[in-house]
Image (cartoon, rainbow, N blue to C red; front, side):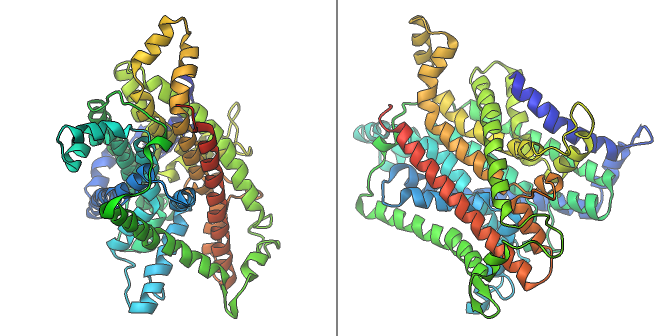
Length: 537
């Protein structure tokens, strides 16, 4: 636990605490009375209520739509499975700015639905909810599907032989085994949607606002650090309560599971019901994920004089306005380098943390578990500003260093590593470790010989998540990325903030490149995962 605790203390707790202190401590006096004053304002109460109910609605809708997809990817074997899995993960790595823009082009004024049927959903809560499902679909598919694919299907088949119906066998055998993984996915979706920023700002307009957008407005627009600090503390406490409830609930449901290689559990669909489910999942993916992505690609080629590569060619030339010190095409290499380093950091920190959490050593470890999830629910604006304020003096003067960006990205990647690996690690039968110890294996060798082969698949899934999150991280990176090495999401956001057809087209072109880079990376990971896990169980 020592290394993860030190990492979070230095790069999360310290920056956030510094921002809160600046907002609530004036002339050496703490302004605690501002809590009651701020939280009694009607507009702030409206923000708190909308943040809560839209996050709950988004989480429920995501689980409802994505759990069938998790089953299809876990239990069905079909041609193009790796490609389809990469496609459903692409939205998760897109900058949230681009998610909002994609749905604005789809459901807003002059969008595809408006042109075809005169239907507009922008400035409605439905656009926000659907965009959140689009963004978080892969969280459920990969987190739940990763464990589901390794559950031994013979346990459910045995229940059916004993007279249980298909539904009862799934409800009494498979669902309890999946419960920790489903809860982990629901928690991540809830935290992401509760702290939603760009999606709400673009699709909700001035009608809807979450805690995240309000913190940004109070910090950047109004320069009211006191109100921003109060809202940050409210967000911090709310996330802590949610994590405590989650940890208590999941712990009661943990059991040792019988694991198999994913290839043993997957087969082609059988019967009308399974084929109908398979077709329904493909249709939902086509409408919910492929269609918005297709709109982005189409806009990247659509110029004022027809379709062409003008916007892509413009990425190779220096920016005439001087906003970008390098050609925009260089942002691809920057993003990949940052993502690789951030992934390695997240795997080390998250792997150590997950290993520590399997020991179940009382309240200290439970508090540590909650700490690891806090970066998903605390404002990225707060973290980004905190980096600039705290990491500016020796021995931690990192503001001019390139490592600052991967460190910020790894903060968001670590929770995904932990939540992906932990259910599998805790599902390993403790008797296997005890048998290894009896045979003379050291704790390190027992972990290497027993746990690692079983958790290797989850480790590679976690690496994919961490890499994807790092590619698309925007909230904190936008404040700390250097002008001579911006990332793809930062470049896209700045292009969208500038008027003109060329800027918008270049933003669409960069977003398309980001999608392709993500898809190729995930396909390579799928191939590596298949090669490394085949035949080892």
